[in-house]
Image (cartoon, rainbow, N blue to C red):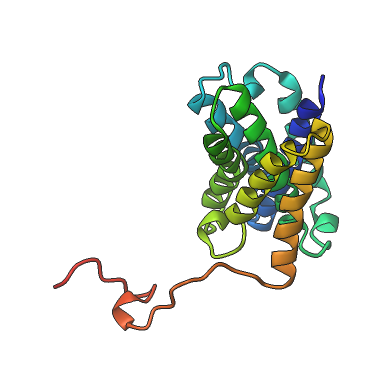
Length: 216
């Protein structure tokens, strides 16, 4: 069992926590919490494996993922009251999962024969897709569609990963620095409220409450 495997288990557990927390906030029962925890943890990796033809997908060939996600989701549900007292716990869990899954997705993409460019895209998809499913199930606007620094942090970490490879450092150090970069960008952007540019509607016909798709 190598470093990437343990990171993948860690990332799955962290994303399971983020899914279970949001499901708990939405007053779902224990089954709903487990379902949301599962799809958040495995969604991005499943899409990644399907796209690159890596079958069976990772969690179907290793029961450790299922067991870990189930335990983490149940623990989160059981201690939800205490967990939710921690400030920004959902965003912190999401940031850690984002960083971890981005680099794992890049590594697996490279192992699958992808170019650096498409490996970065695969890393972003691995990191973001589980959260998209989570947010849709919980009736939230997916973070990747908001103006927050989210996918951008993933992209930056992917670039750092390939830059670090040129320095010829040990792979584990390169991976750790790249993951830390993504987490740091995400956390700092939240702290200082950094956002991507967004076009503010000036005409009432284009406001979110009165969108006109075609001329009448």
